[in-house]
Image 1 (cartoon, rainbow, N blue to C red):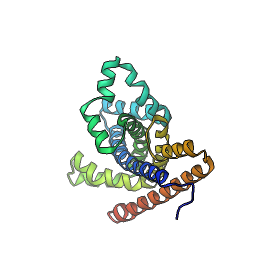
Image 2: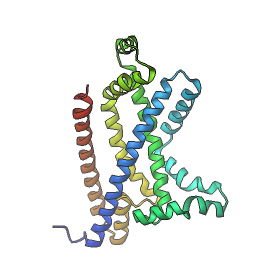
Image 3: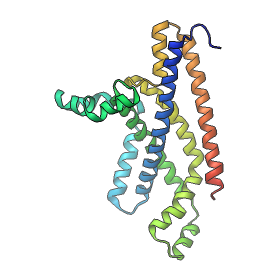
Image 4: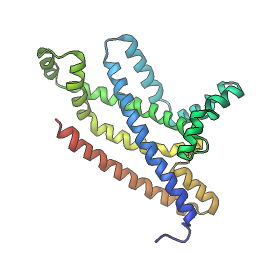
Length: 242
């Protein structure tokens, strides 16, 4: 049973926003983890060029607010191009038309821009967390793998990656939960995720307190659910796989 102010139209609006928030979180968190591990590995590399690129990525995107990154990708980047080219690249091409038809988003580029910003920001933190996790691996584990004739690739896949993730996972989990909460910032670049839907509901009804409290409860429940999932992953995969 829903309260009187939560009409079917508004409930449908909020559910669609909630679905986008969940999808945006899942996709960008997974990509941020992959990019973070890659950047963290590059920072450990003896290749100065790879290490320099990783340092540039980490320092640039870790020290810039996620909202600023979103605004740059959503609004500033397209304005670097002439009007016709801007329209063709960012708003009117076959891929974006397909994405709009598939997802129901009227302006899918802004959602993509928000996603890219979230990935870059979170991956910068995850790179340092993974690097710290690898740094905590006992040296004798690495020496033992080398003594057994493990190649660099085998050393990474069999020792550095699993043990580094296992060590850093509690901190990585905390960062990924923060990543979930950061998806609310996408509302400021016209991405119709849950907080944007709540703002739209407030505009239509002028019931700010009700919908803001609802949004707070929903984000709290999402964070609890995501935290539980991450704890399950840590217990079932990382610890059991140790």
